[in-house]
Amino acid sequence: MSFEEQYNQLIAKWGKTERKGKANPYTSHNGHMFSFIDKKQEYLAIRLGKEEQTAFMEKYKTGPVIQYNSTMRGYVEVPKEMFADYEVVKIWLDKSWEYINSLEPQPSKKKK
Image 1 (tube, helix red, strand yellow):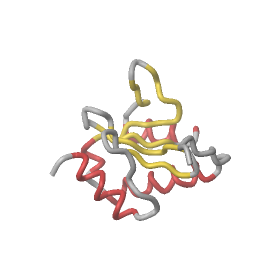
Image 2: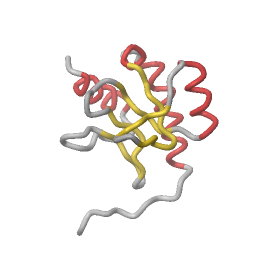
Image 3: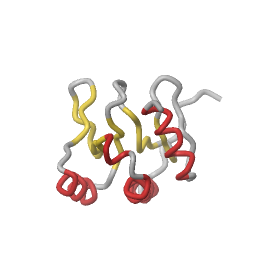
Image 4: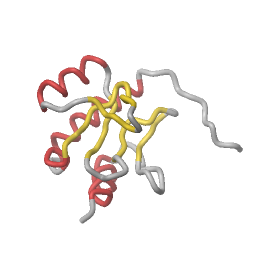
């Protein structure tokens, strides 16, 4: 099973939102993206509040997400090995969901 298929199953099982993006799979809520898989499909990235981000990086010995030579503020890299453990990833997706819900909603950029 491909990494993208695993991501699709993870998000479907989690059930709080739908997977979006054709070429670049991601999730978002209230106009805020909060998870995605990188283009090379090497890791899952999730967005966390400052305290959770620090706790995650210390606990799992991982770093921030770097895309196109820029650090993506608030995102942490979930290694593939951890990605396979739904119960652990669910805890962090829940924390990400809580964080996203604490932010002001962003207006949609889609044309009506």
